[in-house]
Amino acid sequence: MLKKIAFLTITSILFAGCASVPTENIEVSSVLKQVKAPSANNAGLYIYRSNSVVGGALKKDVWVDDECIGETARGTFFYHEVLGNMQHKVSTESEFSPNDLMIDTTAGNNYFVKQYIKPGLIVGGAGVKLVPESEGREAIADLKLGIKGTCSK
Image (cartoon, rainbow, N blue to C red; front, side, top):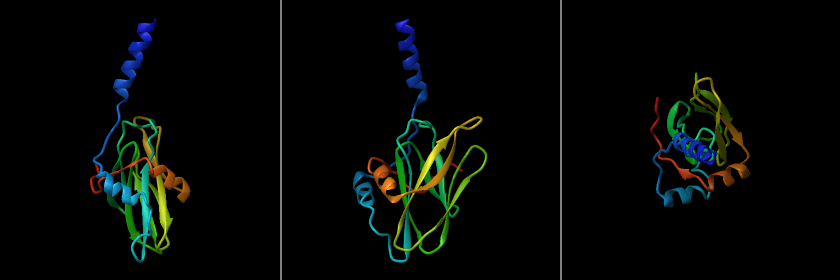
């Protein structure tokens, strides 16, 4: 019985796996984790995916205003500046279609968008939601900064 449990545990770990994406060096990541004000007339977007094991084997694209920001994996974040005082669209891929979040920005402010994995019929999908700054700051403290510009689609 013990051998069966050990076998199942090891097999589960091997098949679970975790996706990874290229990340920036720690110095660049550390500067962005300080969450300073964005450039003049701009708003900052921190888009992150937690370290949750749910969907850990999946990579999901993220776009801002239809521009590829990058692929997320478990425990990564991106920082992207946009023009302030405008509405912007943050999108992520899902099983059948992109999921969009519209954000009305104010110049000088930072916004935190959490990407989360949700169950799908065939493969897990993803969604995005705006979270309070305090929650976002705490979340990115332990995450790695992804290298921008590569999406799968």
